[in-house]
Each structure stands twice: as C-alpha cells, then as structure tokens.
Image (cartoon, rainbow, N blue to C red; front, side, top):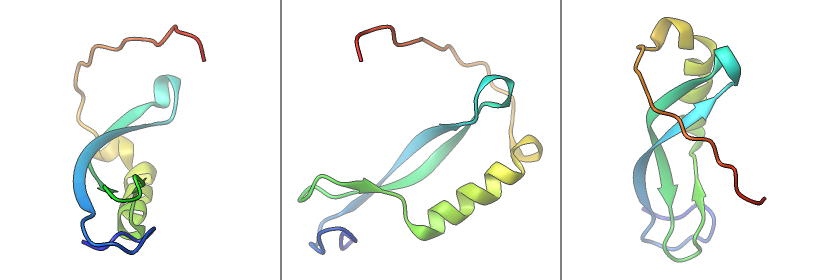
Length: 78
C-alpha cells in the first residue's frame, strides 16, 4: 500500500480499538483499520474509515454490545 503522507510503498493496515465520548456516553470501536507507514512513521485513518466511524458514532447505542472491560487510569506526569 502507498502511504498517503510520504507517497512511499510499504504502508500497512493494522486493526486497533478506539474510545469515543466520556462518562456514561463512552464507548469503544474495535477493529478500526489504521494505516501505518514504516518510512515516515505516520499513522492515519482513511476517509472511508472516518466515514464509517461517524456512522457508528451516530448509532452506537443500537450497534454496541455490552462487555465488561477492566480500566486503569494513567496517573504519571504529563
């Protein structure tokens, strides 16, 4: 795959989990495709991925499945 940032061949898609919202309205989207380039070091979401994320964000209460997830809070220096 060609990197949209630097134009070099070799970018790869990996799947990640992203969180959205906060408090009682916080939810996760699993399996989000993230493009990562080994040449320039950039990671980015494609336009198609962003469009699907917006679709999910608008309907997350209907699409989400409840899962119990342990949560740790970062308390180190910023």
